[in-house]
Image (cartoon, rainbow, N blue to C red; front, side, top):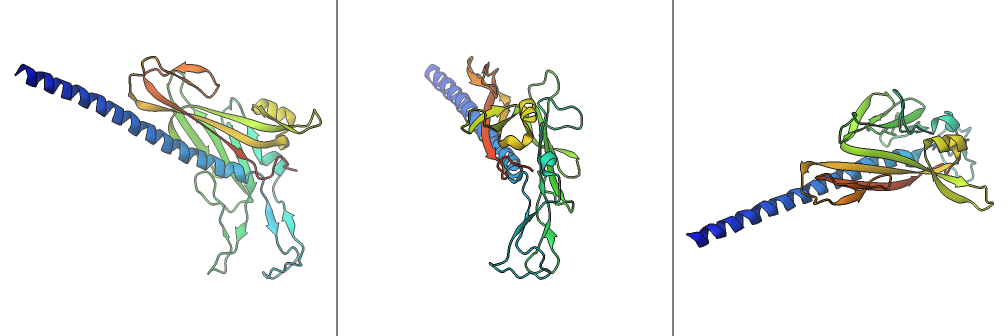
Length: 252
């Protein structure tokens, strides 16, 4: 009987450990999926930043395209001021990052009516001249995590990611002061001082936190600021990605 009790106790202990490991792996997978979706949503908008329509037949009244025809870019929105805007500490109605690009109707196969095919960060179409997507991170004072929200053309905020411990944006500026073009990182304040038109890319850092308590045994991780932080018995995962703006730093 004693041997049997020891066997059952060992089996239960192994089961508890196995369930804990399985739960942690499952939560890590969920955080990775959430981060992947969030970064794809943000990156899709950043890559389009400042883009404008290429007219393959300016001045033509028909839809035929000839390779000998000239082409022209059509600009119908203020690219210099409406392509990229950022705030390190946004006030009410402001965003950590806001991206804009030209919107226009395209011919649709099987339909005689052109349709607006571009979508904002929430997947919504618009008939306005500009697609706008604004991202803002909101976290209550003292809370471990908050929500990353996005507002499309209708300016109505919706949550696109929860359990967000931190959200940081850095801008890649082209520095010409040395005579040789060099890239450097800058926050929103420095990017605004240098001129948003000098921004060639945007780096996003997303820190997600798990829901389940886990014994991290004093383990640490590097947060979005590069600081070593105690895990605090919660799973933390930090994701970074950089996206190049299509207009390559010129919004004139």
